[in-house]
Length: 160
Image (cartoon, rainbow, N blue to C red; front, side, top):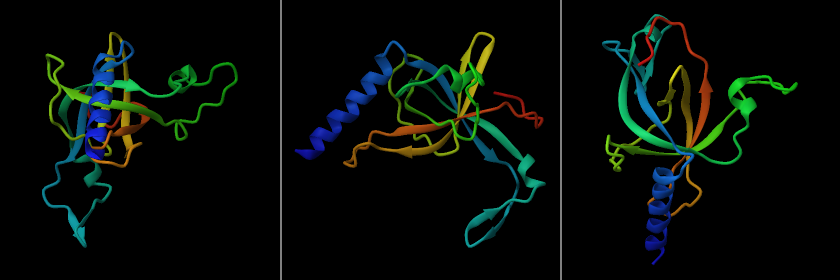
């Protein structure tokens, strides 16, 4: 019985994300390190400053994203009407559902530190998944992604 309730909540969240008029199309990419054999300590990779440049951005999936809560314009454009803009403090919550080109759900697991690109004509906003949480603790979980807006880096890697 409880599992049926949780599955219904998950299906409702998916339908809401896919059909909501304010949901946007996004591309999800993953940063993968291309260093041959990074040194490890207890199974954890240790990267030196020289290894940080050895990575590639690979496409994971196309998705639909629905912002949750109140998204203020100052969060996106900076200091407006004297509001202080501090990018370290801006975290945005969203539902993200992976889809294919026909907007049908696909099975794809999004992970922490994945990059989410919201691409529009002449404008790109890049987010990074900082945290994945669930408002209900019964499986299957409804993931809420906590996103952090990123400034575009000029490290020689081209945006996908």
